[in-house]
Image (cartoon, rainbow, N blue to C red):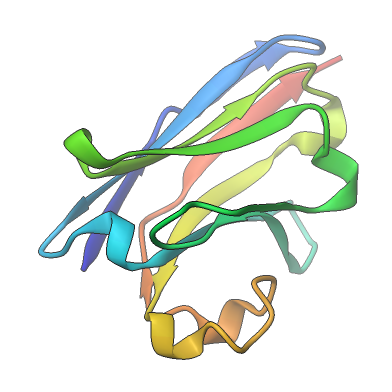
Length: 126
């Protein structure tokens, strides 16, 4: 499956953005899809994930209550709605997909994801 991420931009603190991750060459509901981010000079971090099929969601603690991951099967896409954005959310955001064969690995394990989209830059001004 190939992934195309989009939706980044520059917003003020406490604003909102919605990131999109559109899949091709595969059905997104057959994969676990995660969002990861990498801030300048920092390691890549897990943000959120949605399981295949019934769509159980997982979030990193700092985004719980502010970010929502969802899936639209008709559009073969996964979204990350980001509200109440903070300057510390500034990063390049990537979406990634992994085979259900990897479901025994932690959703936050970036190495378990097989397909990665290009990043989309999110910049939050204070």
